[in-house]
Image 1 (cartoon, rainbow, N blue to C red):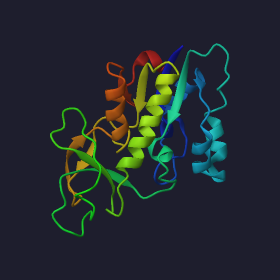
Image 2: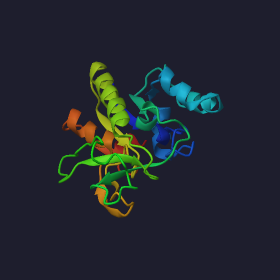
Image 3: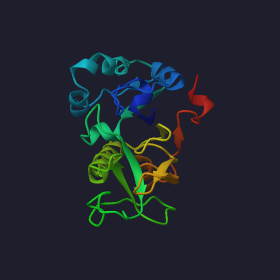
Image 4: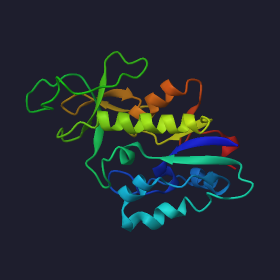
Amino acid sequence: MKRLCVSACLLGIPCRWKGDAKPCEAVQRLAERAAVRALDPATRRALGESHAESAEVVSHAESAENAEMELVPFCPELAAGLGCPRPPIELVQGEASEPSIVSTASTASTFQPRGSALPIRVLRVDRTGDATDALRAACEAEAEALARAGGVDGFILKSRSPSCGLASPLHDPAGREIGTAPGLWAALARERFPGIPRWTETTFPESFRG
């Protein structure tokens, strides 16, 4: 059985920074033919009671017989303990030129996607916090879990997300958009699972769309 790791918001799980979802009809149709792995307890707690019913909606097919594939929902930001709802984050490259912008610039952790000339941080949009370490730890843990389960055959990732996007907006420390870069989970998935395809909600193959 093929296994795909899917950005949880695309399945209708309300885990985005605003507390909503970003359901993708094609991904949800795929879920109807798949065994969808139940959310882990920590993620369910992070969603809270008000969203428990929505989380169950995508877990009901977990034991479906004759499933064509397994879907593994994952939200890096929720798994990192950033909360839901939570302050928005973005990808940032470069050093702060003013003390008021990211006071920890000299000591902040970074990640460096393949092909990127300079390291990148994941910061709150208002520059009051650095989420890089927490996101990295959550993504490393998910990669280990997927490897222990026998690997993964593909990733369907939310476009433009600072954690999942394949080409997400990249900003300078002052908040100006300067280009694009992969989110931390997208970059780590490429590193840990070389050769495994990564798609967005609009580019995953027609053969999966049903």
